[in-house]
Image (cartoon, rainbow, N blue to C red; front, side):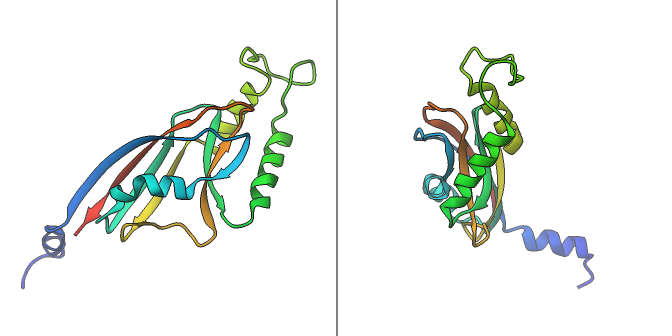
Length: 163
C-alpha cells in the first residue's frame, strides 16, 4: 500500500533471472536453393531455451554468400519458386549482359553476395515459454546461393527472462 506503480513493478520482477547464452554450430552443406532448417536450429538450441519464459533468439549466419529468412514451412514449391525469383532478379554469368566485375571466385559468387544482402544473414525470433514463437506456417530457411557450398557456420544467441 502506498507504493508507486514503479516500485510495484520493480518488486514484481525482482525474482526474474535474465539469461544470455550463445552457441556456435555448423549446418551441413546444402545444394543451391532454399532449405527449411527450423528443426536443425531448434535441435541445436533446445537446451538454451529451457526455462526462458520470455526472450529473443538471434540467429546469425557467418557468411556472405548465403542468407536466412523466415517463410512458408509447408509447401516445398514455395522454396523452389523463391529460388526461381532470386535467379531471375539477380542474373549470373560473365560478359557484356552481366554487370559484375567481381568474378574471380566464379560466376555465381557476386550474385550470391547480392542475394545474401537482399535477405540478410540475421534473424530475430521471439521466445515464449521455452519455445520459438514462430507462426503456424513459418519456418527458418537457409538460402544457399552458391553452386558448391560447404557447411555454414551459425551463431545463436538467446536472451530472456526466466522466473
